[in-house]
Length: 330
Image 1 (cartoon, rainbow, N blue to C red):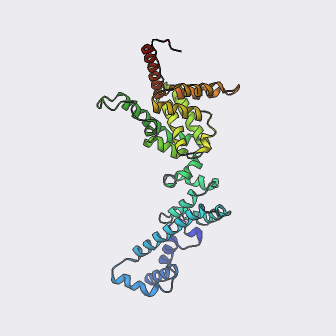
Image 2 (image 1 turned 45 degrees about the horizontal axis):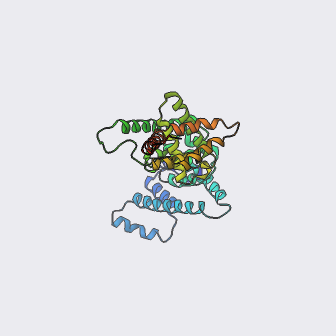
Image 3 (image 1 turned 120 degrees about the horizontal axis):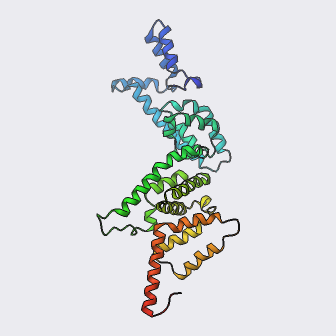
């Protein structure tokens, strides 16, 4: 029960010292139970009934603790989503009082719940979580985002396995010939971006523009290094997954958003009609001097195999139309 002593609550060390120095261990244990049990006068007479049913006091207190923890976490969530102006100040004050018990497993969910609902966590708490592997692994993704945004290397370590697995899955789907009816280009864009990896990446990014930019930088670097076009697919799928979730904080600042949205609609319809062709050309023509860096990301969107397949299908459809009508393509 490390952490209880920091709050002035007698813990294991106190009990060990008391038993070591007392003359009557049973009396010392009874005194400890009386002083540190549930201070509810109406409860004490009822406790002997637990003995009749052979219910251990440990099991009873654990069940009470679980009930209280659940009620507290629910109350914390309600407070965080309420309209109270000082709700986050209240949560910060509560966190300061209870953070020392974060290493007590039974009490940890309460502390983690407070951390999860704070939009800005003090660095001293983030540092302690980062230094403890167990705490870091149990922290909510909302907490980890605040750690990742200041630690690109750590975020890269978290993202790298997902990117590698994504490429393996894509190549397996491309070269798998066991099911002739399930072709690589068959799934719609919306279905493709519902995969676990894309959704996991979207969850890791959340509404954090800095983390989104980090992922894009990872994808650009890997694409330039490997020339693997599946990284281009993931770049488009991640953006459109955030678009589906209406994450406007990111979509509104990504200069490729509307272009990608239009390309996504073309891929869905497996055709680029004249209207959308003009829209895409308009996006390209609208790039101003000094914004040439956007062309690199737009080229990744168009280098997506699904986009290239749609362009090829549209060209073939146009050529068939010209042949059938004995006209020249324009």
